[in-house]
Image 1 (cartoon, one colour):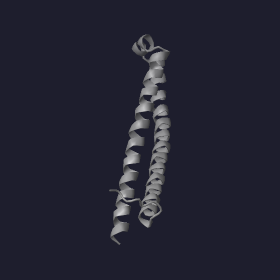
Image 2: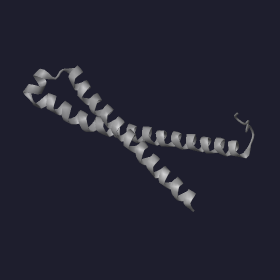
Image 3: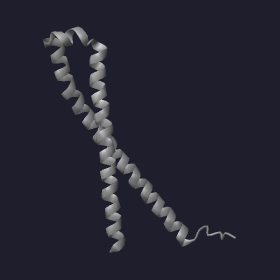
Image 4: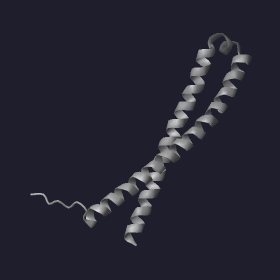
Length: 107
């Protein structure tokens, strides 16, 4: 038979802990989004310049890379950079926060 512990200090601590974890998760994901967007901008510029230059200078690229292909190359690199950096940032932030919680709990 389950006991009703509504309003107990244990439940309030669990809710506070849950709110703290949720706020930390939101902060981690927000940092990941910001870092991913920055990486996507850099990757777009770093890809667009050589792509456009090669289409203007190289006969093979001029013949085979139309505007759609150029856009596909640039957007693929930007998307990959976004997801890779965002994922690494979220994992690094979560790892840093989990280590911080362990040392706070031990003290």
